[in-house]
Length: 218
Image (cartoon, rainbow, N blue to C red; front, side):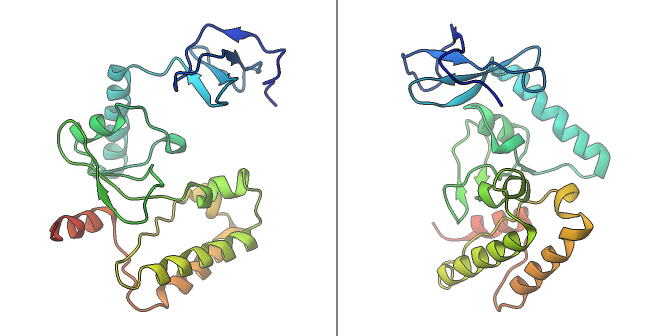
């Protein structure tokens, strides 16, 4: 585990949120620390972050490389984006929109789509629930697959009730190497069966949702 104690050295690194009480460098082994960056924790606001953060030009190239890799592997250029661990920089939305990405699944602040404000182009948010992501809930939440099955059903039931008149999004964020394991995949089938048994459920792609959303009167 990392050492965030007072024994950790104070680093000459600014807090991303502007705190002035000092930032401590995490005492870590090489598993946690890349050669070009290190992990830090602000002793005031307790935010944990990596420094240095990639530059805007580096992030632009990172996005372009990721899009090209998906295009090459699938034969289809992606129009949606989910960042590593749902993370973004202040530049990410504008960089994504400039590369033709239509929607992001990084933000958990709404259960309905909304239009973002990139510098150029258009970009929309399709809200996610990071806690119910299959990676997070298993590795960090320490929930069993039976608990996950129940939580996902109850998640849907709540959204279904709330969306009776205005609609709600349920973005089920999955990783094949996690939920696709033989002892887990049956539970996904059961959850999807529960969802699809309800009237009025629209099983849509991200692009279909954005097309519908844009067609609605302001």
